[in-house]
Amino acid sequence: MSPRPSQDRLASHGRGGAGNIAKDDPNAHLQPADLVTPTLKGDHYTTGRGGSGNMAKNDPNHPELARAAQDVDAPRIRESERPHHFGRGGANIVEADEEHAARGSKSPELKPEGAGASNKGLLDKGKDLLHKLGSKK
Image (cartoon, rainbow, N blue to C red; front, side):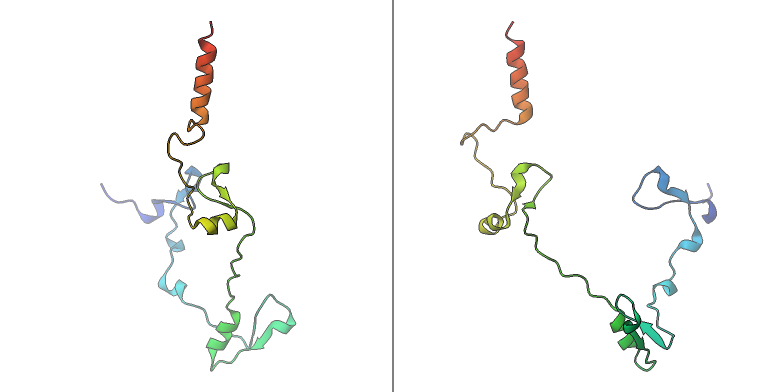
């Protein structure tokens, strides 16, 4: 069996699903030249969000200055003042920041069996109720 020519090869694009399968375009593949950081060739360059006050003169002897002026810092991470949610869902996994810091743990503490309230889940409670209703004949 001979390999398929590149123009007939199928490729998956995106996150998945049948709609993301199409013929492979060999011209769309990245080449090493595509990964080189471009240099500014003009006399002026822009910095910031725009506007005439953000124009600067390009010095061809020091291209690193223009590059540094165009780099944008990532926004600072702000700690949320709202409760944090841990795990896959449910009200039991919500705790305020103070509680979380005081406990020093990200996972909820497990109660030993037999301590306090019943450890039955909602499904077990529903089964018990249906069993009781069915046996009252």
